Amino acid sequence: MSKILAIDYGEKRSGLAETDDMQIVASGLAGIMTSNLISFLEKYISENSVEKIIIGLPIRLNGELSEVENSIQKLIKNITLLFPNIPVERIDERFTSKIASHYISLSGKNKKNRENKHLLDVVSATLILQNYLEKK
Image (cartoon, rainbow, N blue to C red; front, side, top):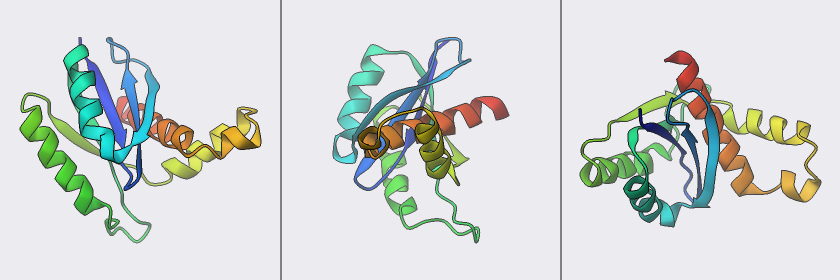
């Protein structure tokens, strides 16, 4: 089997998570600046077998899509052009940042680590991917 990759997209930073090759466990991969996301994906996909990419769907509480959705659509277009054999799926990402923040605070991390935005992005991506795996 191949890995599944998840992206918690943000205008400034994005978090990434991956499954193991058996697609059982979601693990944090990286927190990177969004401006480096495509180059990161190119390198990662050249070195790993990726079956699918999951990208969070930013739905507000009122059911409307967040403004960041326009940027995500551009990213999806770039991904499908660069990696036409890797399907992209979306999954609701509501509350993942709040849940990630809660888990980080429970982990015993010190205040500096709890405020690390890259860590929050990685944990959020991991939650998105774990949610996808559980629904699959």
